[in-house]
Image (cartoon, rainbow, N blue to C red):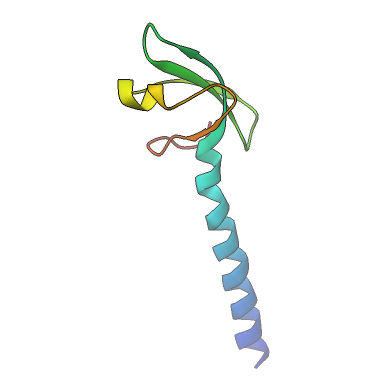
Length: 76
């Protein structure tokens, strides 16, 4: 019984950690640049800033001061 309980707790701990990883791809848009349709995003996890170039349609919907997630990038 103790082994089952210990395995269950381990499973819950590791499953909770994996749910937080996608959030490391999100952050606050701190600036944008129309010349190349880019935004600078401050990571929610690390506080680091990184510039991303977006498609024109995505750039029009990404406003400074809003949160934005980059799905094809690991945390920065």
